[in-house]
Structures are given as C-alpha cells and as structure tokens.
Image (cartoon, rainbow, N blue to C red; front, top):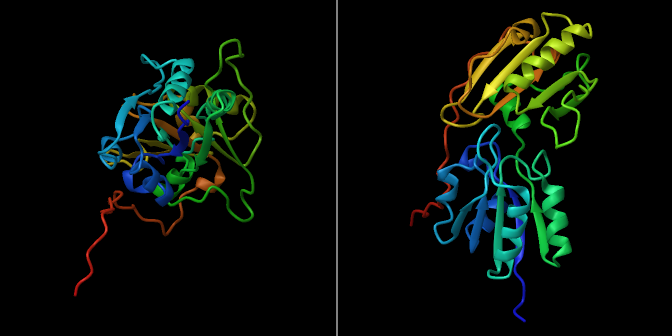
Length: 255
C-alpha cells in the first residue's frame, strides 16, 4: 500500500497575498495540490504554479461546496500526493470549520499540520490603525459571527466585552446594532466597518452604533464590523495610504 501524504491547513491571511506567513508560503510553493477557499486571491494562487488548484469555496448566499465533499477531497488527494495544502482565508482555527476537517483527516489516519494565518480582525485593526484594546478603556475583545449551523437558533448571544468584532458582518451587523441599542448601549458608540480588508479595493467606513442600526450599503466583498470605545478616532490620526504589496521574490545581491 502506498504511503499517505500529509495535509497542511494553512491560513492565507485576510486577503493581500504578501500577508501569508513565511512558513505558509514555503509550503504553498512545495504543494502538489491546493484546495482553496473562495476568498483566496489569484495572486496568492499564482505563487504555487506547480500545484493543481481545486476550488472548494464557501460564500454566504451563494452556491458553495458542501463540507463533507471538502473532507473527502482532502482525503482522496492525500492518497495521491505527498503534500496537500488546504488553503483557508484568515486563520484556519477561526470560523473556518477546522474542527470538522481535522476530525475527518484524523479518522482517515492522515497526518495533518496547522499553519496559522493573520485573522481578519487583526488586519482590520492594522488597516484602520485602531488597537482593539486601550488602557483604561478596553481590556477585553470578542470575535463572533451570527452564522449558525443547521438546527441552531438564529438569534445567537452577543458577547459582553469592551470591544466586539463581528465576522461576516453585513446585514447581520445591523441586527446586532439594533440588539445592542435595546440592551442599553449608547447610540454614539464608535463603529468601524471594513470591506475587502487588505485588498486593493478595501473600503473603510466610520460610523456610530445608531448609524449601523439604520443600515449598511450593499457590499461586494467580505465585511467585518468592529464596535467599541477603543475605536474612537484619535485627534492626531491621519488617513492611511492603501496597502502596498511587497515583491516576495528574493533579490540577487550586488557583486
């Protein structure tokens, strides 16, 4: 019986190709096959020209690949190839169905390793130059999503922390804002909405909790919403220039 390959669950980061970790990039460039999320950019996939690419993306409200099919694909590819990369947006262990994929691989007797990535909340804090904690103002942060599994209540609880970061925000964030107002949070609470974080078409909106409760414009890409007093604009803050991509190719040294 041929030996089985190894599967690497790699965090692609928030979007920009050069925000993947060095370890993640090296493994990507040695992969035989890459099973990638819908949010992984073409620029990142181009960094693995030697690998077969298989799209297994999930997008809210769109036709998506079933999780059991993704699990089967990873197992099947590990029977054919030595290095199988499962490339996941952000960090594999944050809202990425990693538990289901790890269980499937472990039950199939396939070696697996997790390579962390930059989760979007931290990239958003960097993009807006707004720390999620602030001495004397905010010392607790919660990452949450309103997406639920079949059979779960659609009205999930909202964490009770100083700073809230809602993944897959969009319309769900409007309902969150309305519930927070009902719970007594003040209407002027600072809110930052970031779409397509770290990409060339990144959009940042600053507003209040009351503004958010009244609605959001339709978004073309993934939306993350940050709420809390730590996000109050600094008097000396200035607009950050767009993310500037870095050439990842090694440069030859001058003689």
